[in-house]
Amino acid sequence: MGSLLAESRRLLDQAIAEHQGVRREAGDVVRLRPGMGWEHNLQQLLERARKEAMLTVASPLRIQQYKPGRQTVADMVSTGKEVRLLYTPCYAETRDYESLQQQPELCDRIRVSDADFHNMVIIDRQVAAVWGGTGEQRPYGFVISNPELLRVLHQFAMALWTSAPRLSRHRTLSQPESDQMTLAVLRALDLGLKDELAARRLAVSLRTYRRYVADIMVRLGVTTRFQVGARASELGLLKALSEQ
Image 1 (cartoon, one colour):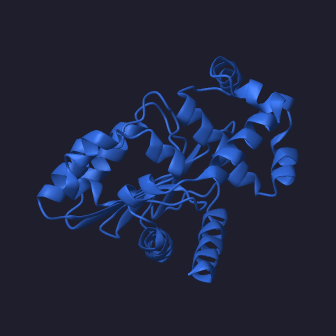
Image 2 (cartoon, rainbow, N blue to C red):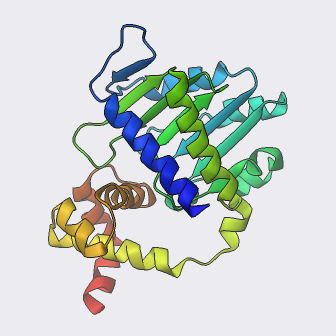
């Protein structure tokens, strides 16, 4: 499974790289910069699903405003549509688990993976939205209807989802290594290290490091890296760093 995920991710990154900055006349791959109406547009995309939808959330672009269309997803499940949801561990922690338990049909569709993946919505394997850039200066978005690229997107998302534990199982697992990585990233931010240097020190890719930063922002409920330091100080996390 590990080799399949690695190959799928390689193909996905290659496909996206080939379409960087391209707007095809046929309109099968359109690049845009997510604006304030991005979440509303994503919800409308979900509402168009006839049979199935895949939603993977690595990190939202606007932490305070992002809403995953929970009621829309619940309505889709209730009408018999196949819905799969994939979250990063840190994003999963921001969900109201007690409320989700009251909707077991929806809760069972959620799985949690610490793999490196994009935010994506794939509808009926016919159209997809891919977006990201949290922690970077220029967020990006693609609306995709190209059949070949859709196959790669769907293959990658399905490989992750089928191999990931359900949300309920994830909640029972202790993840001390996750806490250690959080402290390591906070230390890098506190030292003012550039992302490239911090990623090398933590032995992770630049994309993964930036995702860790974005996940920490979600967990702390802040929208800027400066606020990360302030909030971490309030919670005593910086003190914990100095004691190590």
